[in-house]
Every structure is written in structure tokens, then in C-alpha cells.
Amino acid sequence: MKFHVLTLFPEIPRAFFESSIMAKAVQKGIIAYDLVNIRDFALDKHKTCDDSPYGGGAGMLMMTKPLASALDSVKPRKKRVIYVTPSGKKFTQNLAYELSRESDLVIICGRYEGIDQRIIDSYVDDEISIGDYVLSSGEAAATVIIDAVYRLIDGVIKSESLEEESFSDGLLEYPQYTRPEEFLDQKVPEVLLSGHHEKIRVWRLKQRLAKTMRMRPDLIAKARESGKITKEAEKMIEEITRIGEQ
Ligand code: SAM
Image 1: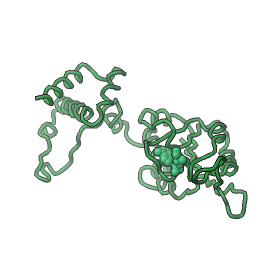
Image 2 (image 1 turned 180 degrees about the horizontal axis):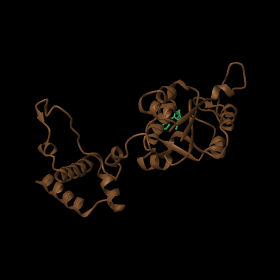
Image 3 (image 1 turned 180 degrees about the vertical axis):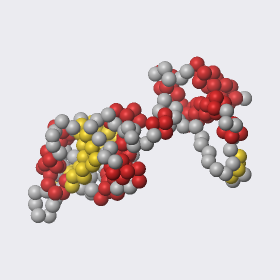
Image 4 (image 1 turned 90 degrees about the vertical axis):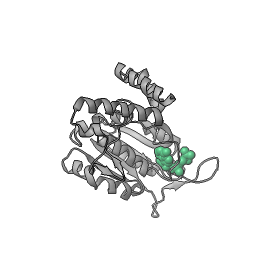
């Protein structure tokens, strides 16, 4: 998979590509990246990349021509192009899985008040938001998307690590513990020390359900709609609800 990031501030995503697990994935050749500095396509000696919006209003927009030339430079053109924007569809784990199956992703990082609508209409396949808030630029949003996507690609991390993660089957993750057995006056739940795999599985499922019901009841409804709540889980939900009502 190759990420092509179009940005006015390549140093921001570069730090991510050069660190930790991502750096290893790049070294192994699983991930490649190309940081395209939009300013390199500016037309004047001042390297101007912003312009005022038609119709007036506060702030500037990204200038059309440098951005279009930067997009044209990312050849061949048959690549999925994403514009990160607060007015896009919400980024989710499902979308991360879908994007992880692409061979190339082109991501446009906006700045100022955003980009010209004609660039969106001519080049962009997906407008994606990382949440209902406004950042000052798109580099952090692009990095969030890249991070969620690349770790799903075969060979980056162990597939077992992905299996019971939050959202993997519509639920949040169970609580986790490491050494020491007693810490801050709290003990690790007895069952996790038992070595009894079936009891641990049941405990973890119940914890996942209880946490999801408490923090994200909307996810329980969605998981039910898509048939992901098993009979065993339904029984546990009844039990958790009964205990909560007592
Ligand atoms: N005028 C825009 C609006 O009201 O929707 C906000 C522009 S914002 C200050 C500048 C850039 O940051 C955007 O073009 C986009 O690339 C990025 N950005 C800001 N918030 C974002 C979010 N929640 N998700 C994805 N990208 C975001």
C-alpha cells in the first residue's frame, strides 16, 4: 500500500512515517509513502498557496492551481483520492478496513478554510471527517486515517491482535491488566489468573458487553441489527441489565 499525502506541511506526516511500527512497515516494504509538498507547485516566487473566496467571507481558501498540479503529479490517476474535511462522512473502523484493501491512497490535507469545490468535484472520491470538531489543518486528520488503515494491512501487526479489538465485531474491548498482580490497592480479576481459557473467554465477552452498554449503547443496537450479538451475548445483556436495575 502506498500513501500519497498532499500537504503544505510535509514535516507533520513525515514524523509519523519515520516512527515506531510505521517505520518498520516502511523498512519491510509493506508500506510506501510519498509526501507531496503543494507549495512546490506554486506559481509565483513567494510560493503563494492561498486565495480569497468568491462572494467574500472570513478567511482564505487553498489556491486551486497549485493543488490541481500537485494532484496531477500523483500518476497514474486511477487512485482513490480522499479529502479530509469536517463536512465529510465520518471515519469508522469499517471504513478503515475498506481503505486498507486499496493499493494506493491519495490524501489531500486542507488548510485555511479548505479547498475549491471544483477540485472536490473533479478529483475527490471520498470526503472524510475524523469527527465533529474543526482542526486548523488536515495533517492531523490524514495521520489519524493513515494510522488506522496501515495497521490493518497484512504483515504490519499480528492478526490475533486485531481480532478482539474495539469495533472488531461491533463491541468495545474488555479491560486489560499486566503485572504486578496487585497495584494501587487493586487486584487483577481472579479469573485471569486461573489459566482456564473458557472462563476467561466468557468473562471477557461479558466485560465487553457491559462496557459497550455503558459507554456506547448505540453500538449494541448496531451490532444487533447486523446479527453480531449471539444468543450467549443476549443472555449476558439480560443479566447485566437485571443487575443494573437492582
Ligand atoms: N471551513 C471549514 C469548515 O467549516 O468545514 C474548516 C476548515 S479547517 C480550519 C482547515 C482544514 O482542516 C480542512 O480543510 C480539513 O482538511 C482539516 N480538518 C479540520 N477539521 C477536520 C475534521 N474534523 N476532519 C477532517 N479534516 C479536518
